[in-house]
Image (tube, rainbow, N blue to C red; front, side, top):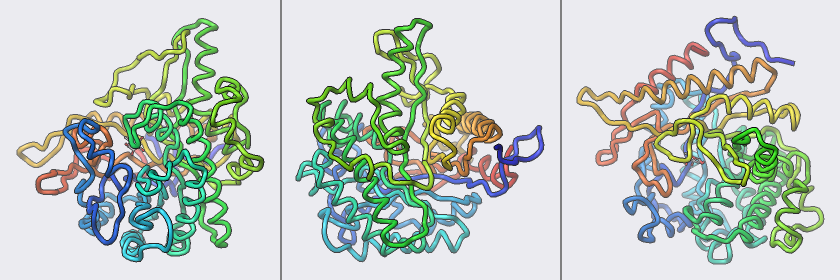
Length: 447
Ligand code: FCB
């Protein structure tokens, strides 16, 4: 069944389409030591010399903690219908456990109320990588107990804020924690330990499932789902070897998360590849997959790049990259990914919670930022998303990454991903050309 969309010709999205933008706590808030906030793994990691570009940290970031009211007005001026942000666990539980810190909860209450006052629907992510350092000191996501700590934290947040948030997202990109945090080590906690990495993948998914259970236990009728970054994996050539390698690669990039969450089983080829003695396989207990596959209300998808897999299991570049060298610009990948999810996993409602690119933005003398590359990128990806909707994919909303320029993890502040330019020395916000373009797209319901 396909969803009615406007007349052919100019692209028209469904009337109730959720036009949005996304951010995350550590990347924009700053105020690292205020109102009782505890330390996170990113505070620790970014202070280690050499870990981030220019030694940048999130201590001040875009100072959103103090400027949230101005940022809310910006969102209203853009006409956003949905705002996806994350809640900082160490603001709520400075040591990762125990009674919630009221001042932390109050900040998010003010933010959420401000969104409602402006007619913008809040979409809150519970975990966007800022694990309380105290939990990392107790072995972080390698410890099964961290999944239970997460469920307690989620319960505290649901009880305090649940009535005002219609959509909750549990864990942002578990795969990035696995790959960047535990395989390559260029994200916190900076480990290079494949055996630990996949145990972490299991515990992150367990944490997700326990949080879904915690929401249901409150009797809330809010919706909940995970936020997965998924990568269409294509063979780099026509050989059967490349096809086989791409299939296994797809397992590690996509099926490791999709099969468990939506089908209740880990892919057999991956379990075989990891081996029966791996920490992950040893760490799976009876009943875990049932918890992990607890019914969800929607799946949040983040799309940035395809991956081309060579016959020997390596990767190749086929398309031009953005300033992020890992990102090949391929809008068709958006269509392939969305239609594949619906085909393989059924008509679960989908939201795009991240899509965007960094561009070499500069503030011109006339106070404009000419980010033409961002406009064409978004136009092409939205066109692909629109085609997926026309072909029956239940996509309900789209969030640009990001609302604001921000702290791009190990890349610090050099990459600019925002619709809105942040002049860091003054913290002044300037709408880039892409922001005014997006405003008209929202107003027109398409382009
Ligand atoms: C995603 C992250 C987000 C941001 C973008 C560029 O992987 O979820 O925080 O870093 O990439």
